[in-house]
Image (cartoon, rainbow, N blue to C red; front, side, top):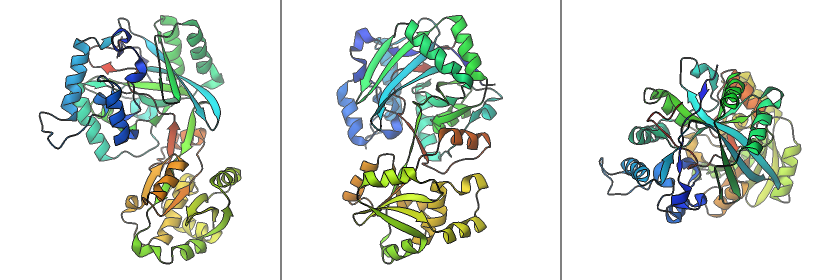
Length: 419
């Protein structure tokens, strides 16, 4: 059973900082160098200084992004820029945003996820983790001894009870904070009523939960669970239409030695259907249901491409992945198609750049950062949950849960913050 607990969050003192919007930030792993600079300029107390501080050639073991995060976190508490709530609470976190021209309101719960003997079985992972990000987050955790950003999990919600309860509580309680970042907005409520807390604990704890975002932070928290015994986590609901899963598209850098004959090798593997625009391409892609269907952009032309049946059959005969994964578009792209286009795929990652934004993919090609782009379809959330429930890991860069959680709304310090 998933066990969650209320906690005393460390939050920005609105009387001291004024506009909360000036001090929040996106998650560390999507902050570009330009955005990092903008966040630094927004406020001397922007949370980016904690979650993703600047590096310098002059950094030393005694003075680096991690030690500076520790210094700032301690100073901001002394100066009451950050103040710990007096009473333990579960926190409602509302995230409003626009997706494909439609407005959404995602409402979830922030709590401490207890790291106990059953956690590894009850918290489902769907992506592999890598050593470099884990080493980075480990150094930060050891320096600050706090969860600076919540892990993002999805909880099943039989009958929509969880969504209905959080919606009701958000209408009955006064919000304790609100902010905006770009086109996104957030509000926070503190739930301290014991009966409401117990009901939320029972609803979230009734089934295994899925990590949507924050696999590296979860793994680091688990490996260092002796520090706290829990990790700050945001829980959204499986049936909530505002939980959006975007695909992650690929910009491909075709090596010079593979560029000659690339188009003919591609045509031997796929059928191409030219499209007049990226909009037409995505309309046709959304209407396609068979496996191995992609959007492609190269040499100024958009095309819907379908993997030839001979290629797909050959892949199935020699596939080295479980059947439930074999027909996923990203698997077919990377394992069945790309090896036929580029012979040397030993360093597969060097061939690709990843983005959930089609416009950014096209802009990258225009800047000369890639040769062509591959556009893939999203995997339905329920399918992601089912695959993870069966212990299956999706390929790297398959899902992008949108929008990502803002950093700076809650901090969990390891100083007795739990109830």
